[in-house]
Each structure stands twice: as C-alpha cells, then as structure tokens.
Image 1: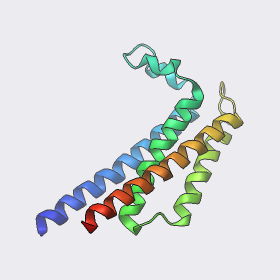
Image 2: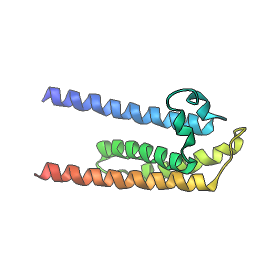
Image 3: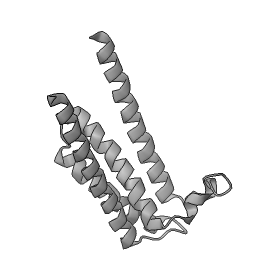
Image 4: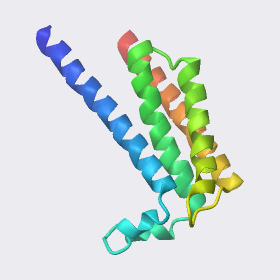
Length: 137
C-alpha cells in the first residue's frame, strides 16, 4: 500500500509541475515580442510555419487538458473556479499582448484559445468516462 501511495504522490507532483511549467511557457510565448526566435534555427523551426490559429488552439488545448486532469485528481471533477480561471487565462493572455511591443491583440486568437480550452474539456470528459468504465469493470 505504501508503494502505491508513493507512486501516486510522485505522479501527482510531476503532473502539477508539468502544469506549472506549461503555464509559464505559454505566458512567455504569448508575452514575448518574438517567441519563434528561440527555435527558428533549430529542428523545431517548422513550428513557425503553422498557422497561428492552430498553434493557439493546440497550446491551449494541451494546457487545459493538463490543468483539468490535474484538478480531477484533486477534486474528482473540475470546480467552476478552475473552469472560469482557464477562460480568464485564455482571454487575459490575448489582452496582455496589447502591451507587448511587436505583438497584437487579435480576437481570432482569443477565440482559438477558447476552442482549445473546449477541446481540453472534451478530452478530460472522455478520459474520465474511460477511467470510470475501467474502475467499474
């Protein structure tokens, strides 16, 4: 039993650390004047050619999935404060770009952020459903 609780604790903190790291990376990427400068000369340079809308939706989808599954581990279901907090984060990151030289606040990006958030909710619900079926079996 002690081994199981230790494994849970390790994965719990790793999940939390991954959520925090990704949140900070998203803040940095959206609030720096040229986030692609870091990867432009590396093998990840192809990411710059992806459409901005897909990047926004994908990043916020993964971020939402990680944060929502983490909140499910804590509360069994994401509380409204987490959901509203993520929506606020999606919108705030876009609004803050008004104050970053070389960046623009684009409503289409805010919509893409919210679409990624909804994708994260859908994936979290699917994971919860599969998890409950496995536990019931």
